[in-house]
Image 1 (cartoon, rainbow, N blue to C red):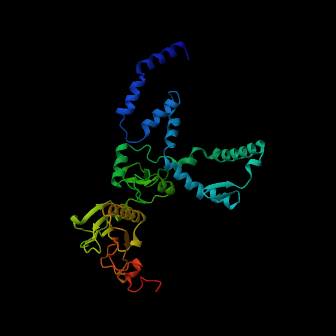
Image 2: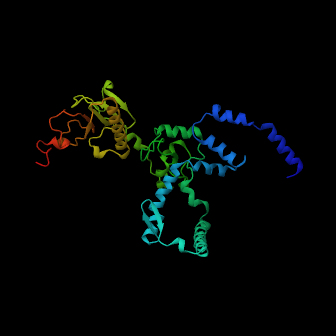
Image 3: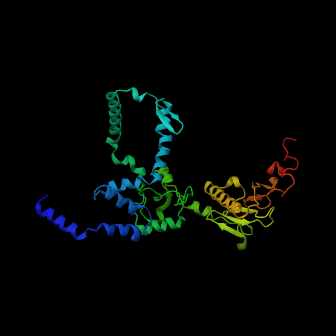
Amino acid sequence: MSKLARSQVTTKMSEVAMHYSELKDFIENKMRMSHIYQPVMIKALIDAKGALPTDKIASKFLEYDTSQIEYYEQITKNMPGRVLARHDVVRKDGSNYVLNIDVESLTSGQREELISLCDTKINEYIGPRGPKIWQHRRLSDRNIPGSVRYNVLTRAGHRCELCGVSADERKLEVDHIIPRNLQGPSEENNYQALCYKCNANKRDTDSTDFREWKHIYDKKEVGCIFCEPEAQRILANTELAYVLKDGFPVTDGHILVIPTRHIGSFFELYSPEQKACMRLLNEWQSYIKANDSSVKGFNIGVNVNEAAGQTIGHCHIHLIPRRYGDVSEPRGGIRNVIPGKGNYNA
């Protein structure tokens, strides 16, 4: 670099440089965060003595992004782990994969040779294919305007339109329904929200439209008391399920957890609905115990079909608080739905 260029850089830096106290004040008092990106970037730049290229900064975010680790954990188990175990190259020992060779007994030359052979295999695979081998992990929505992305995610209720997982649990991507390599247009009506797992599994050869799945969750039936619940009885609700005071409580605090979609059987619920119901059951049993010290146990029950006593054709799960003395003999619990079967040692 010429003396003039160095002088220009020095002058430019002197014009924009912050003092330590100013940066400290920004971090402590002025930084407004919607994610961890700002402090991670500042920390990375400080560690690097002030300057880093974009790709190096991006790699720092990956140190905190557990979703990427989760993705490659599944890859490890389902692909190389399974194949190498079948060939007795590795074995599973608890949570570890172990190479079926005494690595410590190898000479440094042998280790280097094996590593070199692996590098050769990696390069042989990448060489003719190039960057496209990572295409399934590239952001599908990187060239989509922010306003369009916002509309697509809002339309999907910020849930994956295939598996139903929330954006809070797993990163959502905007996917081309008809892939670009199949001449799919880059237009809003050709976009859908998929979590990174569903999008990776879908790949770019499938043009299935999952947006209609959202409307499945909206199914209601006129006249159903659980599709049209009394507002004053609703204790909590989510997009896929809600909590209702039981109209004819068996014990004090008896509640129902009900999927919002009109569906008859618990076994017909989609996985996201079952998870939503389980989450509410967990939250409410904790809430009940915290607010009523007399509660010492619970019965959880679901009646499926008329033969099992179901009287309302909309799936609902009973959460019944139990107290010592509420019946003379609680032994057997739900086995008592058939009289005489509670005492299984009789």
